[in-house]
Image 1 (cartoon, rainbow, N blue to C red):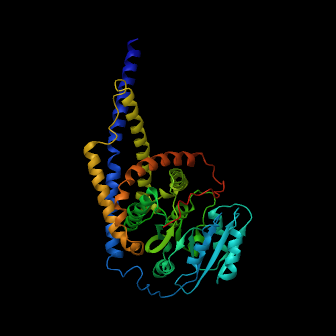
Image 2: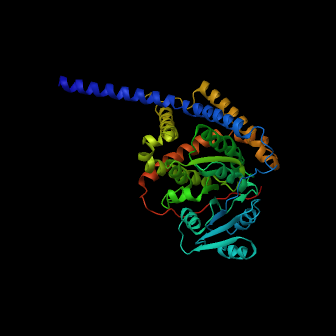
Image 3: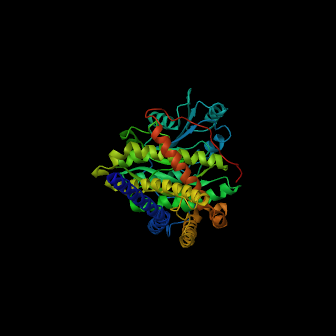
Length: 437
C-alpha cells in the first residue's frame, strides 16, 4: 500500500511538473510573433537598401537585358469566364519582344473555353489547350511547360492582371544569374470595397511583401506566389515540374527547386493585380488550403531538408514548425482561458490570453511593422493612390491573423496528415470577392 501511494504521489508530481512546463511554454508563445516581426522588419530593410532604395520609378525605364530569352505566359483556367478576357488582354500587352500566351482550359463548366477560343483568333501569339477532365492547376502548368519550347515559363492565374513591365523585370534575374530557377512577382489586391479587402491590401504589403523581402535577404524563400511566378524551363525539367498531388503547387515547386540547388528570387517590380476573397468563409477556405499545402510539403520533404547539403533551408524549415507549434499552443491557451472562466476554482493553471504589458508592446510592434512595410511598398501603389489610407484598416489585421491563422493551421496540418499521397489536386470553387476597385 505504501508503495502504491508513493507511485501515485510520483505520478501527481509528474503531472504537476508537466502542467508547469506546459504553462511556461504557453507564456513563451507570445514572444514568437514579436521576435518574428523584428526578424522580418530587419530583413525587409536590408532588402530595401540593397535592391530598392534609389531605384528609378516603377513606371520609369525598364532594365536593359543582355539577351531576351523566349517566354511563355501560361494561364490555367477553370470557370474563369468572368475574368479571363481581362487576364489575356493584360498578358498580351507585355513590353517584351519574344513571348507567347498559352491558356489552359481545365474542364470549365462555364463559357471559358468559348471565350478563349474567340480570343485566340484575335490575339497574336496565343494558343489554347483544352483538357476534357478537371486535372488541376499543377497539371495545366505542367502540360503547358512541356508543350512550349520557351526558355522561361511565367504562370499567372485566370483572374490576374499582369503589369506590362512584369516580364522584363522577372527575366532580368534569369539573364543575370544562371543559378536562378524561379522568380516570384509582387501580387497586389484589386478588390478593396470591404473591410476584409482593405485589410488584405495591407497584409500583402506588411506581411507577404515584407516576408518575401526578408527571406531573400536571409537567403531562401518559403514559396513563390501562385498568382505570378516565372521559372527557368530547364530547372523545371530537372525537378520533374510541378507535383500534381500537392494542394499548393507553388509551395511545392519552390522547395523542389531549392532542394535541387536552384535559387528563388523576389522581384517587387513585377506587379500583378489579383482578386482576393472578401467573405470570412472564402478567406478561411483559402488560408486553410494554404496551410494544408505548406504542411504537405514539409511532411514530404523533411527527410531531404534535414540532409547536410540542404542546411541553408534549415532555418526556414524550423520557423515553419515553430509557427505550427505556436498555433497549437495558442489554441490550447484559448481553451484553458475559457475553462478557467467557467471553473476558476477547479482549473487554476490558465495563462492570460493577452498579457497586458505584452499586448501593448506587440501592438506597437505591429504598428511599426505596418508603417515600415507601407513606406517600402507605397511606390508600387502610386497609380492606385498609395497605401497610406489603408494604415487604419490594417490595425485590425493582428486579430484576423491570429483567429484565422491559428484555426487554419490546425485544420491544414490535420488534413495534410490524412491526405493520401498520389491523389490529384483538382480545382475547387473560389471566392473572388466584390470585383470593384
